[in-house]
Length: 91
Image (spheres, rainbow, N blue to C red):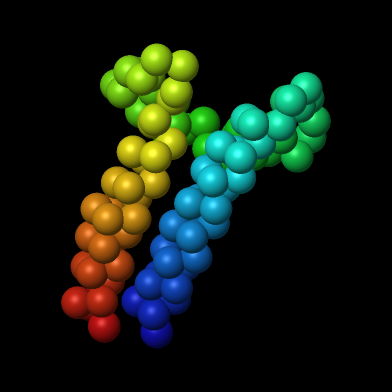
């Protein structure tokens, strides 16, 4: 029962985090976006703890920041399967 709850919790957490990163990337294309807006600030508070360390490691390609793409790939193809696979074994 607890393992099932944890499995669902992490599954939803990874989905929300991925969606938040995608929304943040899309919002960077909006001209004159006020990042002091409360919703934009919440979005930054959710995604910055993951994106900022990646930005320090991954250099931009010209004017393009590829760190969100790398974070999404690592999150969806490495971290998510590891965590959910471990929880699946505990079922």
